[in-house]
Image 1 (cartoon, rainbow, N blue to C red):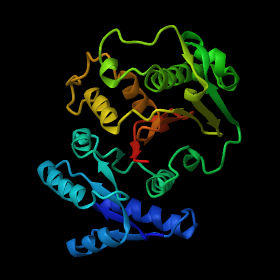
Image 2: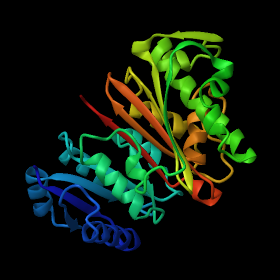
Image 3: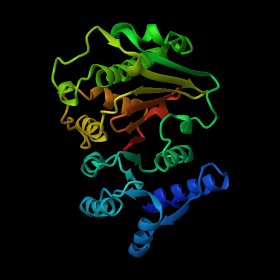
Image 4: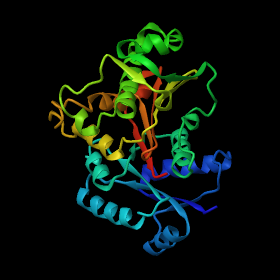
Length: 322
């Protein structure tokens, strides 16, 4: 196995949090592989690590020095462009990190100081192993309350998705939680059906009036796979289509167009006909997207019953070639 290095290119608080998290993960043996943690090494050391190990790089964007951050990120992206290396951006909510993420095709973003050992453990496992589908890494204690898999196939009536397939899970939720779940599952399932079954392209989704018919025939081979789980603090939804046509660049573009980083300024995509639902999911839940190009796409969301924990903290988009 190729040695794995955690490369921390960051300062003070982020650095302290990450070092502490990885010390705990190693001490408690919570990772399925050994790691070496390097903090702000020299250029010569970075070159050695790049050529001899698989690196997970945490790169901190500095809002007070945007031009310098851009140049440094361009250099790091070029050096670590080989398959296997992964980059995570550490970003301030006051900085237009999404434009940089889109420019350099980096889908994994953590907001400054808003991450914990569980997020770091899950992210490390997903980015440094080939088995990156599923959300078991985010549920270290399993699914003691609910755990069921579904298939959306056959004659599917779009307006009755919830009651047809997911009524048993809906019955486990408090009344105020049911509305949120309805929005989440409908958004995820309709997107999966549009891309993975009906064959609507990204360009067609951007055209006003392009929508699924009221009833869609889903062949067994194109069935949408849904996994819903719940523990005592949150529930998770995983929706998988069998095409893998979604791209990280499109997700970043859509979320960026619905985001504003200047107080009082409207986002550029305020009148867009697509992308708003995905943006809302990214703001109201923990969103994870796993893409095996041209084979399958998995969109995961996790919703906490404590609403404070649903505040936007990270974006995880893991795109890989077969």
